[in-house]
Length: 345
Ligand code: CUA
Image 1 (cartoon, rainbow, N blue to C red):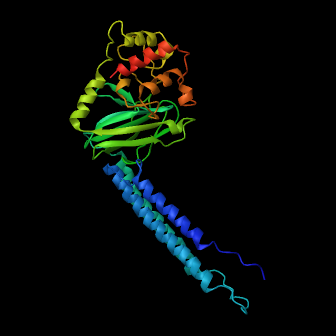
Image 2: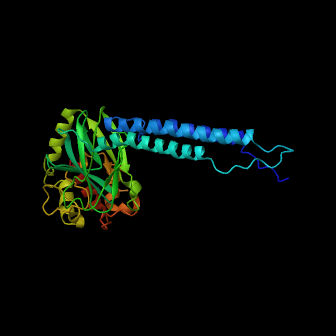
Image 3: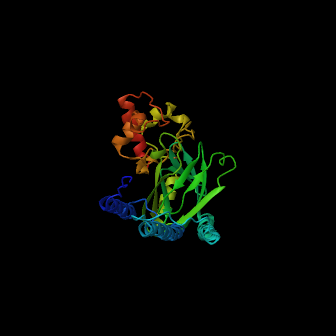
């Protein structure tokens, strides 16, 4: 008689169950969770997720239960002869074809509404053009003529309509607490943003992290962003400040030296600073108000003087693969440029 296959010990099964349960609990508490929605669009996705989850668990328990039952109830016993041979059962086959089809059609029906909802922005929504670039997110407010990066500032309680595009490869915009994933597709820039759209309405103040959800190169993981939902008045003030040209440094100051340095370097080919002549590059982030941002380099680093200086000096050390080159700057240049950029509030 062949040796019996050992069943997995109950300890292993229990350990797995605890692991899975703890994952569910911790992910609910973490920042980027679909289980803690703050937008109606995300809330309907959470409801859909719960339907799918309950259905999945039900099917799992039913199937596994039947397997266990038959394995125990009909196991081979000593003295058993040849079992009764059966060849097909029309009833069983029809049943196991129709039942899954009903489940799948039901899921499709339940998904349809929430999917349409993700794109159906209210008419009075604030429009933001979102561009994925290797490797950061650019946010433009076309009505105000403002372009920023890494941080999407929005008024709390107001619908925001995002028109997505990409400057290079396919990226995917995803802030789990605010809604589903939506691809940012290259080529849309030529025809204007708008083929891929989504919207959200942040119902409470706060910071909601998101990240690129489509493999887009070596720094795919370094393509994060934060949505900051602030009171309407604070938003209006922020937008007005961002729409102003860059502050003019005092003559003879370190900041002025920094501005003069930057205007004579290759920086001008990739960055815009509104007010500095010749800085018209659209490849990297618009730096007109870079000092007002809390994050750098695809929101991977905080915008501190140390981080900014290091980023200007040795970008590849902080973000391997980043498209910003090291320019071989002198320590004096790094110091002056850092001071100037931080002054751009
Ligand atoms: Cu952009 Cu991944």
